[in-house]
Image (cartoon, rainbow, N blue to C red):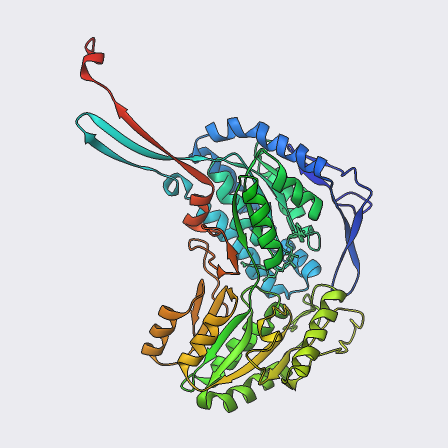
Length: 492
Ligand code: NAD
């Protein structure tokens, strides 16, 4: 960052100030302090980054995978060395509490570690003698320049679902982080600079829609990875694919958690509270609807209401804080309007977290945990991603009814079941029409060596982020059939 607090772009191995006059403030959502200014870079600057990435590609793809991953080993060490500082930056720009930010950075590091297995992961396969004296090989080769566009809520982790795999596979990348939380990636790129990666292998362009369109329309960008809201994911998928690119686009969510009467209520309410209110509900895996089955209704409603009221809300850097603010004032207003809308649609406000006063941070964008009882399943709010600390309770009579509700929703990011019954758990995991499933788990976030799944309106594409899916996404398969008649080597 320059002395005037303005972020730069990282292109071709150097920091370049954007030529734009359009800068927006990066605001700490708890204190409302301005942390820096981010440029809304024009498409021309994306073009420079793509040119740098395209220029670096031929040498980078010829660098053996075992040598490519040496840079990732260095990056891993640098991330761990600066772990606490990165975690604090995440908290300051996104609002989540420090422990959540630390967890986020660990997930980032794990993706770098898994990508270090690329020499094995990107191996092809072969068959000797598919016909007499003829052999066939399948090998994986990189695509070229890849674009990565990420959301505000995990500024330290989500770019790592993609770029370590992309570059380990021999591609070069242009990363466009969220303009609301760009500071963490800016710092990561300073560390990437120190890792000694050849210029142009990784590039960073700050900005918003214009920069994204620059990536989607550039003929030299071969693939685009996106994470964000569903309307934007759809847009990215359709514009990217119609321009002939490979696209993976993770979208929004509305995650249901089913509570059966045999669940261990105390533990379940704690786990559900962490799922719904952790990161102020701004996780794509946040529990958003609790479907209580039969006699679970009363004990669960009581326990979750108490957990919601108990939660300590404040600034994420302060010791003892359990939940921070939401990202912007607009976001707060939108969430509070949706709470009102739910009440208008027939829900009862069991715990109302609107307009709280948080001592010392009166201007911050806080909404306290909110619990809505008896939200009609057919209401608009039951289908809307609130992306705030709001849990809606819906009551049903049977597990079949609950699973039917899970499968009726438009999203398919995650669904969880709380029970002590093995057969119920098996039925649920078999029938739930979602990509990530939790059983007695409230945030079923796949580890780095599993795909970060997501179905229906939560994902557009075929291959997800992380692990082998990422290797599949960032490589193209070449099949070679080879014959060497013996007569051609007579002289040996
Ligand atoms: P967003 O869709 O507003 O923004 C995501 C990215 O797209 C940002 O980089 C932004 O600059 C860019 N963008 C925004 N509008 C655009 C437009 N019209 N054209 C082109 N680019 C545009 O999302 P957000 O508010 O930053 O993040 C929250 C959303 O992300 C939630 O819906 C959440 O569920 C989702 N999310 C999903 C996952 C997942 O794995 N499925 C993970 C994290 C977040």
